[in-house]
Amino acid sequence: MSDDTTPEQLRQELKDIDAQIAELRHESGGVLSSVGQEGDGVQNSEDIAADLTGVEENDAVIEILQQRREAVQRRLGESG
View 1 (tube, rainbow, N blue to C red):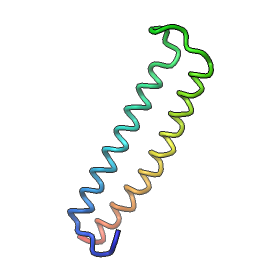
View 2 (tube, rainbow, N blue to C red):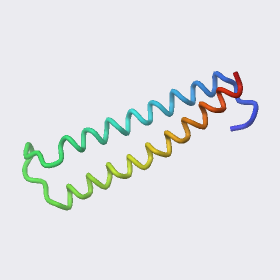
View 3 (tube, rainbow, N blue to C red):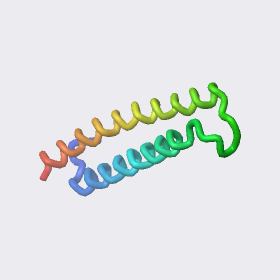
View 4 (cartoon, rainbow, N blue to C red):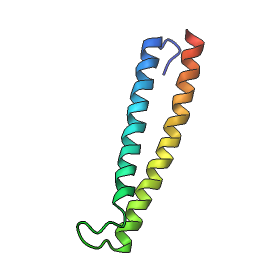
């Protein structure tokens, strides 16, 4: 982003980041709640490991998005 970003653009970016974080948390929550359940049959250990790896990857992306959100909030505070 350039220095001439408006406060409204920064607020929209915060909304977008919040939506991305919410989607990733929702996705991870669904995976975690289904791990080990026998509804569709027995999950093998490879499937469980892949699911848990996906959750860990989501957590890493969420951390990056939270850092980005903090940076945007600082910029918004400086601009207005």
